[in-house]
Image (tube, rainbow, N blue to C red):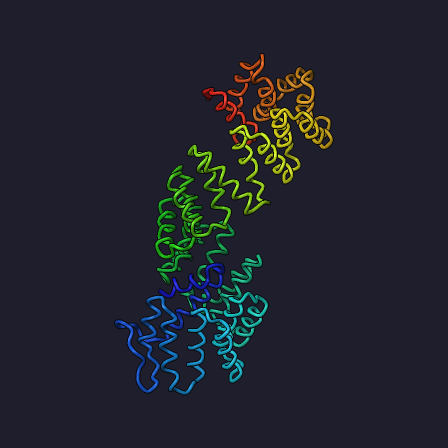
Length: 470
C-alpha cells in the first residue's frame, strides 16, 4: 500500500510522512482505479494509468514509475505529466530527480502551486526546513486555502511550540478539505498537548476513517485512549499499528508501556525485545526492559540493559541508581560506587548517592576513598542537614547517639527510614547484626520505594537471606 511505501521512505521523519502520504494519495486519485494485475505500457505512448494505479496499490511506486517512464518516452511532456513524474520520483525516494522535474515546471509556470508544494516536500525530506517554509508560504500566498500547504505550515508551527497558530492553520486546511489526513492528525496533536484527550480522540477517529491503513493514526489514538483509561481500546490501536507497520519500533514500545501498567511483564519484555531488534540504537527500549527484567527477577538481563543505556545515552542519569543497585546486589562495590558517583554528578543535591558511595568504599576496605567522599558531603551541605549528621556518623561511629536521637525526633517516616538505613548497614556483620536486620525490615516496610536507601535495604535483606516483613 502507499502508506507502507511512505513509511519505508520516511523512517525517521514522521511529520513529513503525512505530507508524502497526502501527495501520494492525491497522485493515486489522478489515476484510474486498479482493475486487476499490472499491464504492459500502452502502445503509442499512452500513459498506463491502470497499470500505475495497481503498482501504487501494491506499495511498489518504482514499478509505477518505470511503467510511466516507458510510456512517456514516446509522448511530448505537458506540465501535468511532468508533475506526475516528479511525484512518482519523490515517493520512490529519487529526490534529486524529483527536484529537477519540479524546477522545470516552475521555470515555465512560477506560480504553479502543485509544483511549489511538491518541491516543499522534497526540501523537507532533504532537511532544508527554511526552504520548505518559504515554498509553503508562497503556495499560500497564491492559494490562501491550499489544504496541503496549510497543514504543512501547521505541522511546522506545532514543532516550534506555537500550538495556537498550528490549530488555526489546521482549521483552515480542514475548512477546505474536511478529510485532510495531516490536518486531522495535527489538530488531534494540538488537543493532546492541551491534555484534552476526548477532543483529540475525536480527530484521530476521523483520521482512521480517512486512512484506515495508516499506522500513525492508530498510534496517536491509542495514546489518547490510554490517557482516557481506555486500556482495551489503546491495546487494540497499538496492535493494529503493529499489524500495519511491523517494522516501526515505537508501536511496540507503546504497547509495552501499556502492558507494564497492567503488570504483564512478559508481554512487555517481548515487545521491547522486538523494538530493540528493530532499532538497537534507541535507549528507551533498554531502560524499560531493564525495569521489567528487574521486576521479573532477571538481574543479569537487567544489568546488561542498564549498561547498554549508559553506553548509548551517558547523560540519561536515571540509569545510574538502578545500575548501582544491581552492582550492590552482586557485591561489586567498585562498580556500584562508580555508578553512584555518576548519579551524584547529575543530581548534586541528592547527597544520599555520595553517602552510599562511601559505604561501598567502606565495604571495599578503602577508608581513604570513603573519607574523601564524605568530606565532599560535609563541604557542600548546610550544618543542620541530616546528610551532614549521617556523614559524621560514617566518619566517626562515636556520633551514633546524636544520629539516633535525630532519628527518634524525626516525624517523616520516609526521612526516618532513610537515616536509619546507614545505622542498619553499620550494624550488619558485627555485635549489632540482629538490630541491623530489624532496622532493615522496618525500612523496607515503612520507607518510600523511590529512595535509594529503601531499595538498598531491600537488597541487604535479600543478601542476608532475611524474609521481609511488610
